[in-house]
Length: 78
Image (tube, rainbow, N blue to C red; front, side):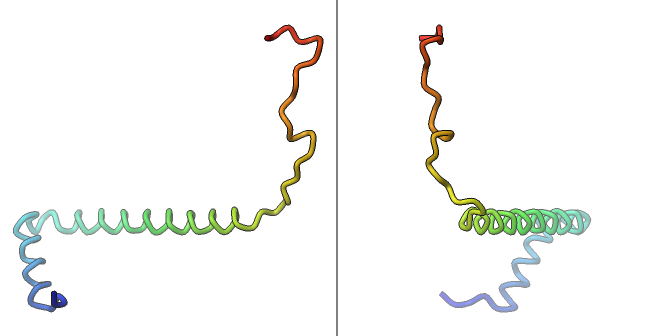
């Protein structure tokens, strides 16, 4: 398959213009831009989250305080 050239792009733009109409194109472009901005922000947040979880600030240790509490003789729960 060949790459798209200028004639193909113009045909696609003409079809979009016919489908949506000239009056709705600015609103459609604004919505598309806002969606792209939100998507970019979410991707940036995911990258920051991945880098922060890959390098933990505190080493994890298996201390008795991390273990689940066991029942004692005074507990009335089964």
